[in-house]
Length: 138
Image (cartoon, rainbow, N blue to C red; front, side, top):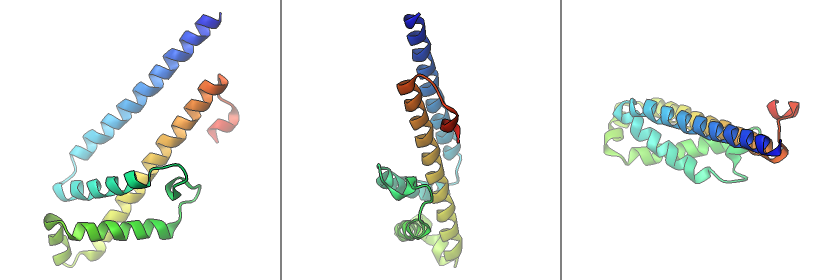
């Protein structure tokens, strides 16, 4: 009986990781359809989030700090100003548009990472305890 249970848990683990890979592949596919300028900005946003992706980072706080989000968005905008293709957006007087777009991308990236992390923590709990409790879904 224990062997059957272990086989079931192993298969569930495989399915969960296949699902994660599938979702990540789908996200990458959709990002490949971004217009050139949006793709350049997304690369800057992803890089910034990669640097913030560690245990204890504000992006994983229950309520991420708005000031930190805005500060990081300003830093990304400064980096964008140095990229020739994006510099044209600034020259057209679209400073506000660039900032809003970066803010949207940044918040979306944080959201995706928070969802992935929450899912992986629930999955780890499942394998550690052998099942989900009601509290795992709240």
